Image 1 (cartoon, helix red, strand yellow):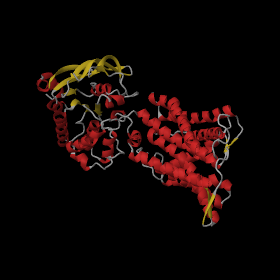
Image 2 (cartoon, helix red, strand yellow):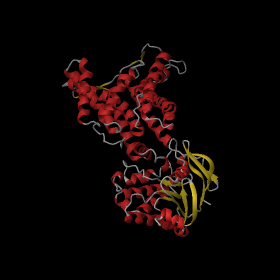
Image 3 (cartoon, chains in turn purple, blue):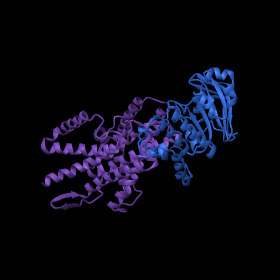
Image 4 (cartoon, helix red, strand yellow):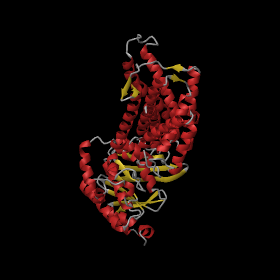
Length: 308
Length: 242
């Protein structure tokens, strides 16, 4: 019984990582109908930014005296700083790589390929800049274990799960209740008419990238707090998985990305609980394939491109 | 003079679509541009609204003056939010995945005068009662005529004082069409909205507008008060079916 609940919390934690990344894929797709294949690498960049911000605040670079801030204060400062810096990377990518193509009226296929290349550039740029040696993320939070009737869960897991739920609720509010959220939904339906409403279309697109990359930065931070090893390729596999989770959920729909992330994690952990762990990805993706076979547009997908 | 188009030459790629057209609109007027398909009517409207690339027609000569200033350097969203020129485009282009109410609300995105928004919304619902009945529906579920009304309502909600209408009669049953034109007439008379109407249906356009211009393959070939154009033998033969 104990193990069963441990697995539930593990699945919720991994689901939170997938969901946070999948939301970024789905937001950009919902607005631009663009699969931003660089997004997994934005997550990786976010993790590295988290590393440098955290070690900076710990006093590693001689600017701040070591011991100025306690661990929880560093976490509280570093999370928003990481989110802001990562969102700047996302915005830069949009500005430098995607916007010029869009403004020349390039077919979406070329933009997708550009995204793929940008991801590789980020990975290899990181490799060239920082070398192949892995970095270790410092311990910032003292591990506290809460136990509730025999089920124990760490403070970190609770933080991760709460962050994913909080981000989802915030996004849901933005998309359904605010004017900029309405504009985000409207763009994918009819881009032509957006400027006719007095809306500067690029501002809405930049806002979308700020949200998506900011949450990837948050995911990067929480991920390296939980699994404290960084390498330049860490975003590749998890990025693909989050993308698949977004598709299974119904890409373009934020509820789909959120639930798709958790679904993938539950299937993965469920497989490992029963079968040898080498079968994890094989069986997990077979299950997802069956879901797509049954519902090709995903759980929340609509047959038309009318979503976010 | 509210809007003045002067010797406007416009190209799409290498093909010149407008060969130096000129026309004026005074505040409070209803002016129509009539002409056959491909005469350059929509091109004229798209040039005024400064559509973004790659759809944008390219001005090679001439100017568009609005309230005394050239607007050729304006980005398209500012034509709406700062000049209050709005277009209800051909083919409606409503946001089908949003409700009627959300479509109208989204059009107020850049408006500064937030106090007037609720009042304007009520005005739209008063002019187009069909929209009021369907305010919570996804707008793709509306009929073609209702979608056209929504496109006009949306153009007004964005604060438009000069309303550009591209083929508002297209595909409408006569009853719906007259209902719509009556509402547009009220907007002009009661709210002081200036209207530039582009139409293939010259008969209804000349009944509705004060003045008209006849556009033929990128050139203006006739102009004058509507009654006069409607009696012009050439216009009658070419556009009013004899």
